[in-house]
Image (cartoon, rainbow, N blue to C red; front, side):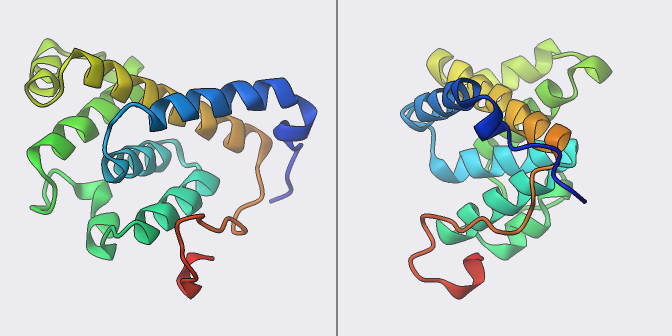
Length: 159
């Protein structure tokens, strides 16, 4: 697939705004492993190959297991995710697919059991951001495969 345009070059200010949002998410205090699961799951739902390449590489480089990454599409049936991760993944799916089912009160109550108010807002911002990145990369067909995780520490499989 041919890249349509490089949005980073076409609108550096828009790209900077996205990066600023990402910086805020990284300062939020949410666990990096949780964020990578959320970003990967949203990217699966949105069919964003570029973000899947990036976030699975980052997750592996930070110690995530292959098994948990492989089973992420079936997280409800797999016993490898904590209750907090399950709440975050369900929240991710609801917000990513909001027209399909909305955001039920029962789901909010479950997320609230595992996150304080700040945590819910920060998690929601992370989901908003990855959905934005997914849309940028899918719309402009960002070339996939060249991402190298800054966390890779010389790991050959990170490329």
